[in-house]
Image 1 (cartoon, rainbow, N blue to C red):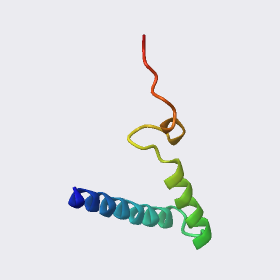
Image 2 (cartoon, one colour):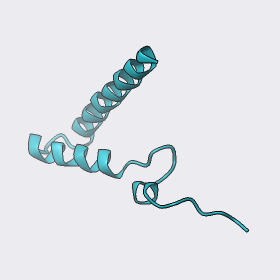
Image 3 (cartoon, rainbow, N blue to C red):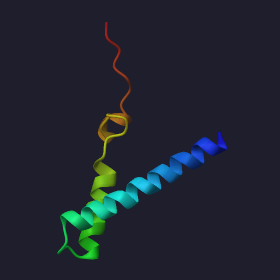
Image 4 (cartoon, helix red, strand yellow):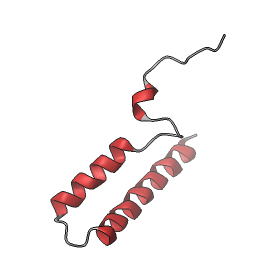
Length: 64
């Protein structure tokens, strides 16, 4: 289990590094602060397993 958690963290770190490079490529004239804000927005607004963050804390809907 410890190994799986470490792999998860490593993959997250790699994904963030890739997005930083993507933001640099897409916004070559942006300042570091602007790119940092874009990264923060991306991290905050990205859905988790296809579920938007605003839906994560809602109780599941049971169909009748």
